[in-house]
Image (cartoon, rainbow, N blue to C red; front, side):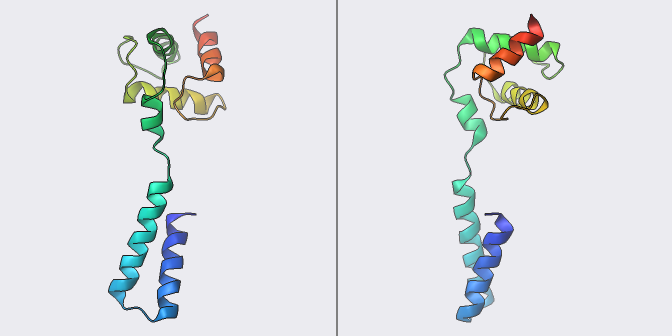
Length: 113
């Protein structure tokens, strides 16, 4: 459900219950907060993945060669690396979750081989 839909539902439910403006706003904020909490934090999941230093270095080398990454090739998985992985995944029709899964690693290896 989109934020707009959650807000509309909150407003309509208040209209039916004859709420005042403050109550409409409170319900809309609550609906938006619940919706935001239900959205997964992709960056946090990607940063918490169990990728080896070698896999991250491979990704950084391939992403540098592919002009998606301009950081250091140090094997450290950070937000810049995750953003570059996601951009690479989008360009190659993969799920842009920032995870170094088998499909992503295969495509990255093809860049450096």
